Image (tube, rainbow, N blue to C red):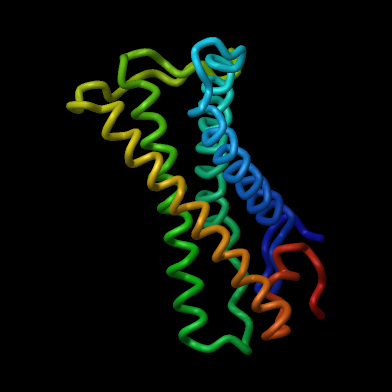
Length: 184
């Protein structure tokens, strides 16, 4: 397998970035869902949000790399068997997933830095609080973060179901290409 995408196959870099983002999104969603129910006396009360923020910042860096990678190594061409509607839906769907990811991450940043404190990423480096003057910043960004996270996860499930539909019903190579399997 090659590192870069080819006209017909995804390369190892794209595959690893795709699945890394998928695992991170669902992991962060589960962690976020769990941590909002913690009470002040829980041993995870401070640890869980710090973990959530650190992984979220790393995910932002991975997503920036992923966007850059799409320019360096464009995605394979759509399968010849896919019609215009399918191709348009795929482009729109991928665009919405990327947009959703960035909305969730930016809103999370705005929540975390509303009080003017930087975000420590596993104690390795800090991301400064650059925007702190939005009225009710933490609350407003919190609502956006919550609703966007739910929308992102629901849409990611729809994305996965579409890939399974391509595999089991259409019997095309869409899913196999993202699993790194040869379809020749």
